[in-house]
Image (cartoon, rainbow, N blue to C red):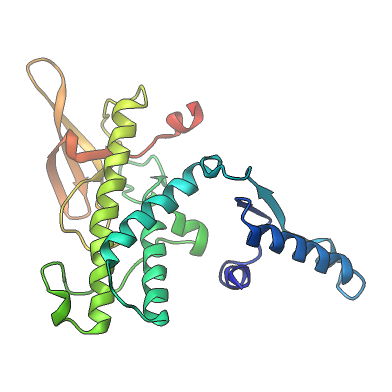
Length: 251
């Protein structure tokens, strides 16, 4: 049923990467058996079209790499922001859909090298062809859960998840840029993600570096960034450069 929901929303995939869970293995066998048994009544195109399941070894979730890390991070924060909340099926389905939108809104790579382009590529572009957005809602961080209506409680959980998860994602970007690559220096024209507090869900503040301010030792520690709201000055520790084409080619 989960696979049917996925296909209904996203279309039929050509390949599915998954672990060796019994439900996934059974689904692969069922789809293969169905295609073989109904080859005649189906059209030529449909009969030859199948879904390829690529399984990782049993008891080896680390083979999943980046997507397993994303699942672990999302589950970690969802458990802590939900706590002992008792949600109905509709409420938890709504929450998970909104969490999915948050994960799919993260900036990955500049859309172009133009210094005037402040847009980035996100997983949402691969899903719907444009960035994912969210309806504006009041800030509920300081509200007590017992005083909120049920819908507002779900919204508060979403906002708490966003505050936790986006800080972790930005910290990971900073760590990767500072310690795991040889291109830690920021250059004029780079597209950067600004680390700011209390931003609404799915709102990533992006900008282009327009100027670098160097100290007496010749090292730049402050940058002037052009954003959609104007120019701002930020220390480099609050800026997260998105990977460039050269970095992606090297990796």
